[in-house]
Length: 424
Image 1 (cartoon, rainbow, N blue to C red):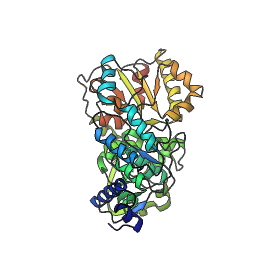
Image 2: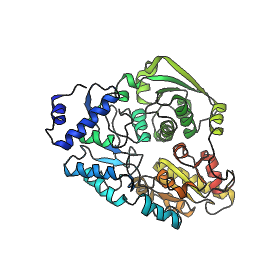
Image 3: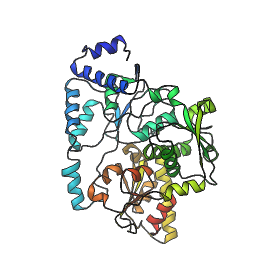
Image 4: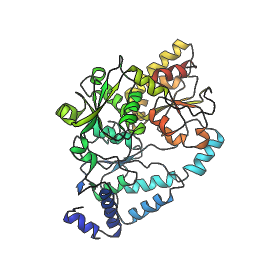
């Protein structure tokens, strides 16, 4: 790897042994992927994926202490993934014991470390850091050092920023040094599409389901999607961005997509069109039957496949302010139709703390509370990592949560029916 004089001096110890090790880590990481150089991070803020104070990751805390002691803190202030605990989310006595004493028993300690390293503020815990209320929204072309998969794919695809799917801890290393290895999705060639995905459905495809289908097909490759603009339009308005948030999270978790292009809609597709497609790109056609096939192939890993759901999670990734409002209307209408006053399954809507604060200022908040729905800043995935929670029959419309946990996937319409009326 060819380093600048500044980078070489840091590697040689000009800023101390700890910074030399940070630089050496980045160099080795880059060389593993064939990077020939390091490039400066230009984004105003960073985002860390490691938000949870698991007792078993003691080496992480030791590393953070060494960085803090050496003054090797983040070059940018950063947001971080959601907190794993919230007292408002339903849990029984034994589940709570495991959460507090056997799983996230280092949470308070770790959050103090994050503050010293450069955490933006106490509300900056969300996987959807790019939402306006949170304040970590990169500009087109900015180089980032992020790791959260759903945030990376959104930043690359919808915002046109540049970031590889880094691993946890590598994100903070890049931010501390101020440089990241130049390879993959940071390069022009790495952002070209090796798949053309044609959408031929008769109705607007479910975002989470479509993302799942594409992710499982193309895996880590870049898809160029044709025909989705028919359903989303050609403007990146709030409705389109919300759809792409959920769609992208599914491509990233059900596969390993870090960037997609939507013809006539996403920035680079609008600018470059089919020039983004590599010669010999493979083709994948998605129609109604293909989406149904994908959905029917999802495994059901509940002990009793016919069990009555005990909990519903919505918001993985975190919901937007508009989603909270829209779902308030949906739940009220569903309950009225079913003749019920409150949801029949304990239901949790998750969103960023800053989004929830804005939601509380609206007339929708008391209306949603009256339906029995709980709002929370929690990470549903971290909740489901509790082995006792994993045994529960939990439902969700998130393909990310379905992929990483025992939660069972249903479409938004199916979820609405179950939580307001019961049954499938």
